[in-house]
Image (cartoon, rainbow, N blue to C red; front, side):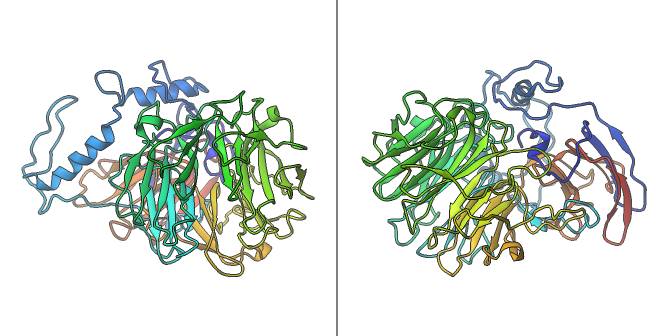
Length: 594
């Protein structure tokens, strides 16, 4: 699904070798050979269709265009109804006399299978989740159970119910503090979730708004090589049992022209959507929308954050690529319908900003924290105001650059900050890893240490944090983080280096596969392999159909299974590591220079 990220968007566990390496794994008692593949484009950043040669290194827009060009309909477009039509077709399959057999070619009708299964019902193959330890015990990629990229998380402050938004796997819900999850939106027209908002006026936590169209790594104009299109806003008033699709006439419908919604906030029927093309406001529960001009110089500027304090609305305009004069924090004291004024005293010059995120202290609403990345994605600084934005100051000390895990800064891609609801001095900021301050920015501590400072490393969480949320009760409250590997929780987040994290990826099936393959005789050998965004390459058929194990780390790419020997698997690492190591399997070992 999607295109491969720039190398530093993937796992920072691998040193740059300058090539994409293809490794052959014989998952038995055999040695592993390696061949180098030709250099490939690193990070497609545009969905504009182009059929020029995509193999020119660094030709990012062309590579993305080539990807989409292979999926065009005969009229040269990607249909906005493609997913909806696919859902209708999938729903009709169980009623058919037999499943389709082999496809004769493009534009030809599939043949009828002579041997239909007992019941032609779709079955999920997984992973749900992927186990990165079983077959990867001697490799650097060790993060326990992982699912796909999670982009948003909200916790009902009345019930404790958790809603998780994922990049390409829709919305999931937990009613038991993350012990197990239920998929809520599998049949909705878009599974790309960019943001979530709970209505605090709903004491049952049943009203949820979801902004579709993921906007992470939106540089320079909202494109993302492996993010999918949105369809506007999904809304439920019954905890996710039923959904309405709203705002399609404003935000577009599953096409390259759709507007990604990266942040949503709500209070009763008043709902705000921060998008790749400006700020939108609804006063009737997301049915109708008006575009609001925040800054005269940037009417279509990206909104990267919005916070409310009951009477004031704060909006952050910033671009991942930076160098825009309208970047800054803006405040409306007139209900948010207009009258936004910049509140930037003592903040860095607008043109130096990359992506910025804002957090308000619910217990002291005049206290806010602002995390700003540079144009190149490094930490520009964390700033604080105690007078509602009248003036700002850098926190007493600055944390280490948590946007850089050793493989390049990426504050344009993973950037989030939050304040404990009951304590205005307890602040968490996430990038590659999570830092925390228990004294309002006086000092900072790395609280998840995803790389452990050495290899191999069993990371307590997966890197690349996209969202932070607090539990509904407790002292301290549980802290939930959403990242490229799914979701984790800690109940002692302010304990510094002694923090204990719990992996909550128990049954979440959201892995973002770029490519996959199945064994030649799948019925006899139920092995499937896939290369996934930031979650390496994995395979099924290890212990049971749903038990998937990681076989190679890094940012997974193309994979293949030998048609003569299903235990021989080819896997690709984007910008791979060049050192030798052994990979342990269940009772068997194979060596690999990868």
